[in-house]
Length: 170
Image (cartoon, rainbow, N blue to C red):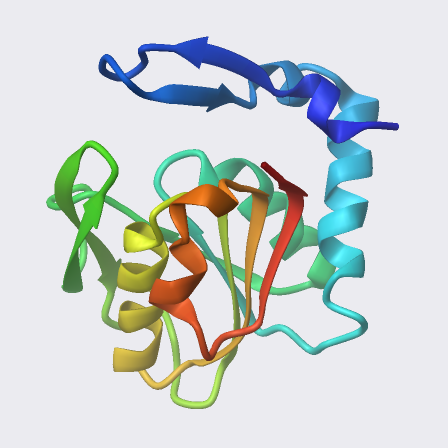
């Protein structure tokens, strides 16, 4: 099965000049979703994972599935003022602006083995911010894990030093 066949290109979204990779056709097909999940899990080669961190919002879809499959806790990383408890934050730049992300201060215990998941590695800004949050709380990053990587944007450079896996590379 070719997972790429379930990714739809949307020109000019969220703004002109951006080619958006839409994963909703993948999510709409249970067989393709399961196959993609298997690919993401296989990349971990039996690593022990305590927590899976999913970046808002498309990182939540497979992030929670990964957590279930790995028998790990799930941690949502969200935009500012969306989490109800005490938070830490990190700012980042993305291909069409800037923003910040937050995580609960009690989400990770020192030494927790953490899988970071998001749908796409583009410029690396979001992934870098999530890595900073995990490290601030004392987590050990086992892998930064993505459905797809837009390699021409060189996002790996911002998170080098961490193991990186993408199911699909463009």
